[in-house]
Image (cartoon, rainbow, N blue to C red; front, top):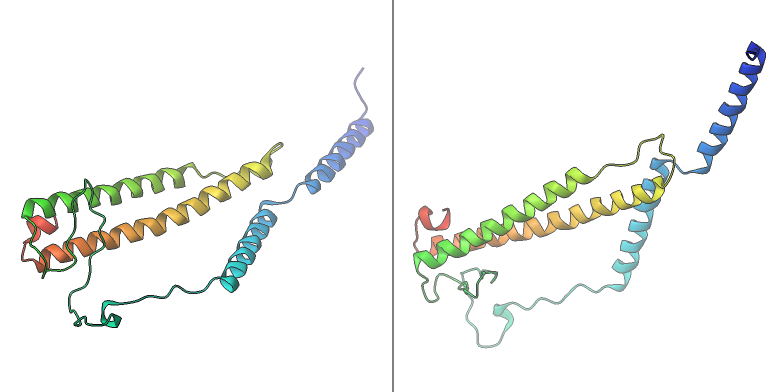
Amino acid sequence: MTPMPKQILALTAVFTFIATMWAQDSPSLGDVARRERQQKQETEAARGKNAKPPKVITNEQLPGHAPSTATPVASSAPHGLSTPASSDGPKQSAEQWRSQIQAQKGQVESLQKEINELNASIQFAPGNCVEGCVQWNQHQLEKQQQVQRMQGQLEEEKRRLEQMQDAARKQGYGSSVYDP
């Protein structure tokens, strides 16, 4: 016995109605993203009101210190090697500079690789997701925020690399040392 066309039509209408009602219970991806953006802005605003900008003291402000024309280089040298503050300080060997710069380049490349892998893993739940979609999408948003933090770190590491290369250049080494 086959159902009559009116019964099929009625069942289809009921299922469509139920599906529509169920879909309205879960927030859309756009709503989740807007809510996250708003929470982030509120958090940043709250921190901004309470946070004081740090006081920066330069060498020129210290008593008895002559102004310097050389720019300091951040010490981020691996394996206990120190990076001199300027070209006026003790001169490092070409091999020391080369190894420090190569290590810094390795850090930059490694961090870039991590960022690329994390970016590739970000996949939001499709619109027809049935269960656990909000939590899944929340996790993906957290991954995006982590990528943004990592990109800030990457820029800092690149800046350190440039400073190291500049310091080696100021000590008179050629590009085979500061751009190996």
